[in-house]
Amino acid sequence: MSLESWYCRKMAMLCLYAKREDQAIHYWERARALEPDDARLVSSIAHAHATLGRRDLAIAYLNKALEMDSGQPGTWFNLGYLLQEGGQEAEALAALRRATELDPKLDRAWYGLALSLIKLGQLDEAVAALKRTTELQPMSPYGWYQLAHAYLRLDQRDKAERVILRLAKFEPKVALQLEKETGIPSGVKLPF
Image 1: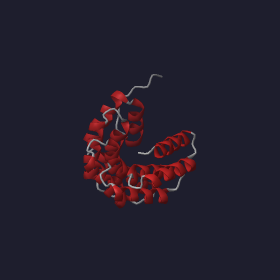
Image 2 (image 1 turned 45 degrees about the horizontal axis):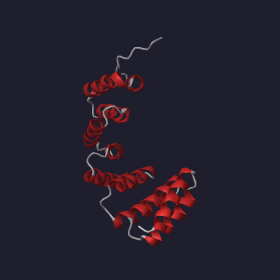
Image 3 (image 1 turned 45 degrees about the vertical axis):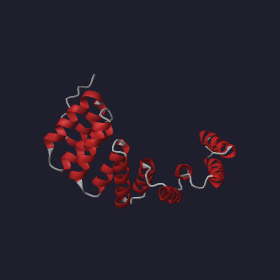
């Protein structure tokens, strides 16, 4: 890496911290001119465009980064996330599957995969992905919350109840929300 490329990268990061994404893009593009084969630079440009609400442009840059280096699970996850935002569930599903194949411990990719599977009506696969999410992040309520709802959609009320009771032990507010939504008692007692 040349000194000029290093400088441009550092300036881009400073611009990001200052919430000046367009200037960050400018510096990353300058660094990219010096290092045209660096897929991470292209991914960084995609991130800045996504932050600015330029979803389609961000997707184009992510695809370009994946053409350069298809072995980056984070890039696949980011692509899947943006595709989900645009309601492109089948395309998101493919990207998120690839992310989990490349990094089986990427919990947010498993969670995103589960959300796409739910939207596509593939509940059995969604449950498997949510179980993986909760294994990787056992104290995060998001996977547990979705898992309870997925079990209910599969008419497995007993499993949903076990999830809610487990959730009540470390996230009582979320368990109470599920109780309200599902009618399944959480066992949480309010202090007043």
